[in-house]
Length: 336
Image (cartoon, rainbow, N blue to C red):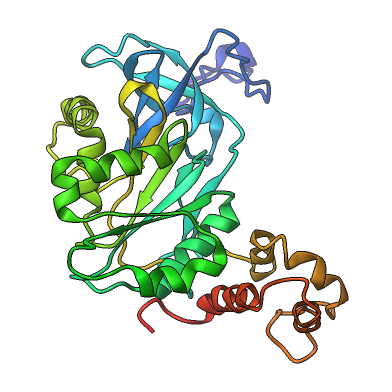
């Protein structure tokens, strides 16, 4: 049966709007001039916990950001309900340009890059001197990622009551990396905590380390009260009581003198994303010597100009050895 007459008019035909509505599309995005500034503290399955002034606010990413994701440490702009009350949700509408980025891949063959932390000033690499044994190749990989991402490295050596630090410190002495040595008894007395705090004051520091090195114990000693306060908020909004280091978490240091970002324990640290040519930037004393290198020089081949540069006394040979060791980490797995 015909629903319309022989001569129909467009106005007579009823149209049903599509699933996305009938509003015309536009490329003009709202400016959100009234947006508040905040910092991402942790991310949990699409929900972000942010600090806005002195309030913990829960948020989600706005659709207009597309595939760009906010990560821990990001400075963001938020609109919506910023009260931080239960069952409220704000919206992240802007992500500020990052000053540094810590990235890694699952392994050297994995092209998928994982961005771990944004805007950190330094990377604290926590390593036990014994139980478990130190893994220099993993330390090297963390150093390469720090240099590549614009972070200053810091070595935190734990369990010095089980083994001396001399051999490991000698290995990294030529790199000029600052370090702190701690023992279990010093952690209990608070003496080690004070030494580590001096290296963190006024900075945003990301902590990394593989399982068993004492990273969580150290972090708890530094920011125990803030961890309990913020993880309580996170658990309230997610409805789950997760282990605190299953996702990165930013915590303020006492007296608001810096931030500590605790990251999940490392099993591997792939460097697929790192261009080896950028590692030389972490060696300003060697970089001028590369002007005579052939194009695409790997800095570890017979025609490399760095050998002559160092032999002429422009730099310490130990520094060239360290550079080549770090460059080689991309060709080796951390267990090698």
